[in-house]
Image 1 (cartoon, rainbow over the protein chains, first blue to last red):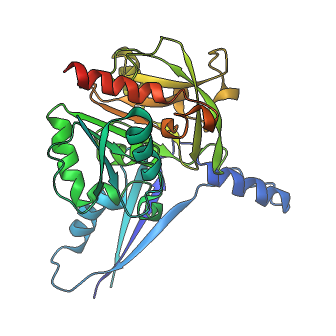
Image 2 (image 1 turned 90 degrees about the horizontal axis):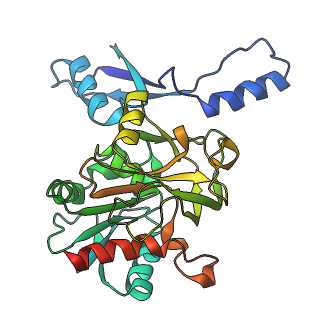
Length: 80
Length: 231
């Protein structure tokens, strides 16, 4: 069964509040060279063999539900 | 005249909205479960606050596909009234009934406090009884209430007089220090282009009785009722 990973990230133009907190936590641990932290999410799916074009199917899922195009970008990785 | 308060799994301000409409404002109101497929007979649909579907994936993202939402969208497209409060606002944005999105607060923690909300337009059913520039004292309670949209959308909202509420100081001053979540241009509530859909992050239903610290929020419900009575 094909496995699909969808990476969803906040658009670069948007402030990532979570990333900023993580960056300051890293700095307090001595990692002061970290200039920017962005947090996203990975959605892993196992898709049935009956689906012909898995990437197309994943794209439809992203456009409809998995990502919000107003605030997010996504990237799809299809594995074996 | 009849209101509906939609209940999603995870709604938690449904009872407050119901109580204010029934006992404080004095109008007919029903709960409508999210699995219903019709909102026939209702004049105004309220999507209440809460954490529908546990806020999983994104706030409002899953509730937006609840069976009731097709009926709510059709109701809105007929020009009838919809009001989304907090999580309800998030659902309306996810359903594309309102532009933009609500993301994590700029200081990323849950923020529960009283804020000032300045009336930016009286050209809405909800704010017609208000005074332009009037500051309502209403609480917010959210972790993801930072309103964002692209510059063109923000310009359009302002040009079309669709910003209803902005976070403000007690005297009506708009300044970052009074913006509790980093919302772009201090926006707390907006309208759709048809002016029949309102989305707002603050909770007017929690500030509709003096005993709770403020009755300012009642003004928005009163405005809605006055519009429906006049129709």
